[in-house]
Image 1 (cartoon, rainbow, N blue to C red):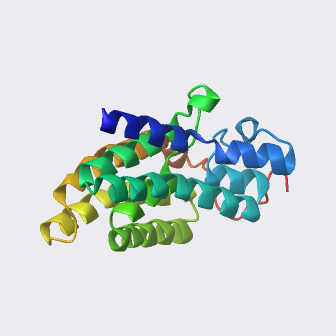
Image 2 (tube, one colour):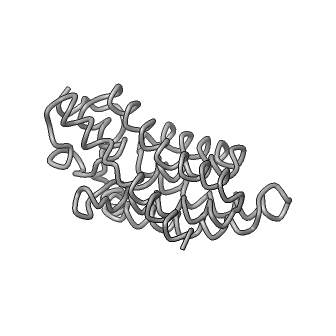
Length: 203
């Protein structure tokens, strides 16, 4: 029962539509009607510019970080942190406040991983950002970073830096993030995905 309540609370925190709220309150627009149509930091960059990207990224990051940290403090259990992290990512991707719409889960997923083991999360983030910068595709960096998280967490578990239980977070979270990028993957293969550097749609 405790874990069920934790999952519900974490899901609700993850469901807070940061990008949607920022777009509405700061610019009076619904981000779902522009760019890729999702409410994450990447679409905030495409739609509203760099400042919006930073604000939405930080808000979504905290949505993943806080539930995991609180779960660790209250329950002191990796299992509780896995439950909190997965529920937060699910909330961000399929928000109850937006009738199942949401983002891709990257910022929230990284935030959750930071709450579990910040050195591993920092390495995964570095790989993600490096691919984004080199390719100029946010989506490619996100997909590569999600895929890289699996061997990174596995290696950390083998070396004793992370509890192997955290793999139960890394595997489904990575799969969810990659699944949410299925449209981006199709556009990458077709050569129609938008690169970093173009002007904001509403800039």
